[in-house]
Structures are given as structure tokens and as C-alpha cells.
Length: 391
Image (cartoon, rainbow, N blue to C red; front, side, top):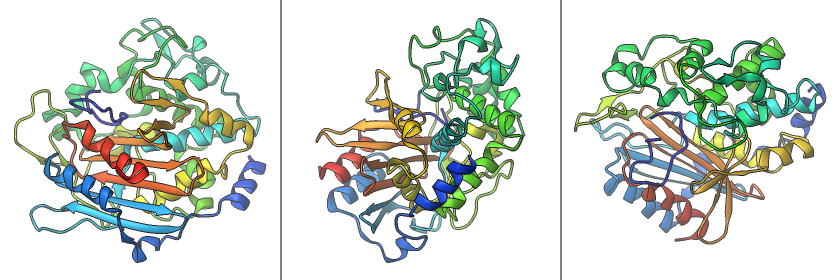
């Protein structure tokens, strides 16, 4: 099931002008766009964790890039293309999936800092009539609840309609079609809320489709253009894009191998590298590189993108009942050694990605698997433990 946060379980996939000026002044990139070109090898424990994902996890390939106080390290296991034996590289472009959510959250927090909205505004106030039906009531749901997944809004990815269109054979039939944000939201609104707003937690991709629609409405622009202007350009993320409806990937990139999230997958593996990103939109559209994502999260936790009040909101977490807490578009993992890391996971067809950085922003990790059927989530979690706890 794409564009969700990865869960450690048997199957982790079941589930303003002033501010801009401050961003440009404060956002000092961690490393450079070519930092990976002089990267050393990974720590032995981290490399072993990648090897295990490839061998024990039966994943086609995995690559990781770390940065510690500006020193980059890269490692990989398996292949970018299993038919040719081409290996993974630090320059690979990847579909980052739900890592997109952090970009969307930052844009909304900047808009709040500019006085153009409040996170406590209702969805109805910003999108009149959009979040209504089958017990869903936008007047009772706030923007903050969208961003921390306490809204109760059903997840469109969990609906029979989504599964029919975009899982299994449906993906092969519909992968190049365009769906508008409203059409995606309408899939979810056929169903009752998961719970009363603010009375529970459930990861819902619909929340961020709505968040993107709010950015569009408030700015008169698009969430993609706002993220590019406010985050991507100031930080110099030259290899990060919002591709819109373009199904292709920039080179170089690994092949995205997928079992299509079929209900009962067989041994068949498909090339899911290309598809229309409109299916993911504001909840999972971004294409990036491991180096760019390390730079982004390092700058974010250092406070380079937000004023102090919004930074506090970003990092105020709620309990999720899972192995992580959740802020506003940020996953906070507490590892076995006590270290907390801040970032997000991204799950889309043919790609599992995670980015995380320590609280001081000095130690960052991004890794990506170019396959999507990992059964043992502990192998995934072991990469964090190896890099940040040396286990």
C-alpha cells in the first residue's frame, strides 16, 4: 500500500516574504550537491544492514548516503537493474513518496508565520464544502489535525476503490491516468471517519491531499511551486522536483521493482518505475536524491526553514501506538540506544525510502530500496540502529 509510513511488523506495507528572506539567510546547505562524489564507505554495521536487506529481505537493491558533520559516506547492496547488473550510485534519483509530507507541512507552517492562515483554522474555512459527507465534517477538522494525522479523515489508499484502480492489475491499467486532488479525496469521503477529530490517530494520506489543496487556495499558486520557492531553491536542492503529471524519472535512477501491492502477490515482479505522480500528489509526489534529502532534513531540524514558534509546532508530537511518534509531517523515532531521529518514510510503487537526522542536524541518513515487498520490517529498522547506535 503506497505512500504510507513504514511500519515494523510482518508486512510493513499494510498499512512570508520575511520568512523567505530568513530562509535564504539561514539555510546553509549541509555538504554540497557533489558531496557524494568524495564519499567514504559506510560504517561496517550500516553496510551489513544494507546487505541483509538485499539478501535476507530479498530486495533487488538498496543504497544509503550518510552525512556526519559534512563528511559523506555511501554504500549499497544489490542492483539498480537486476537484468544488467548495474549497481546503485549516490547520484540516483528516487521516488521519495511520503517524504513529500514534510515539504507540505513546512510550507503551511511558513504560511502561518506570515499570518496568512492558522493551523487551527478549520478545513471548511479554507476549503468550503470539500470535506463533507458520510459523517465527515470539515468544520470540525483543523489544518493541524491534517498534518499530525489526528483528523479521523479516512485514508483513500485503504479504500476498495483505490485498491481496484492502483493495486495489482489495476496499477498496470491506470498508472498513466490523471486524477485531480478532489477526485482522490472523494474516494475517501465515501466512507465514515475513522474517529472523531482529535480523538485518535491514524495515518491517512487524504490528510495531505487536503493540505496541498489548502496551499493552492491560500496562495493562488500550487503546493509544488510554493515548495520549490520556499524550500528547494533556498536550500539548493538541485536534484529535487515535484514532477506533476510527468511519469518519467530523471537519470540516473534505479528501476522500481514492484509486486503492485496485490492482495495475494505471486512471484511475479513488475517494472513500476513510471507512473503518473498525480495519484500521489501532495502526499507523495517528490523525486529527489539521498544527498538532497539529507540536506533538507538537516536544515529543517536546525531551524533554518521556520521561525521558533513554528519550529516548536513542527516538532510537537502525538503518540501513534506504533514504533514512532508523529509531529507535523515528521516521524520521530526513538532508537534502542536512546537517540531520537527526525525524518519521514516514503512508500510508493517500486520504492521504499527513509530519511532521518539527529536533533542537532549533524548526523543524517537517507536510504532507499528499489523494491516494495519487504516482509520483515525489522531489517528496515536495523539500518537506523546500525547507523545511529552502531548496532
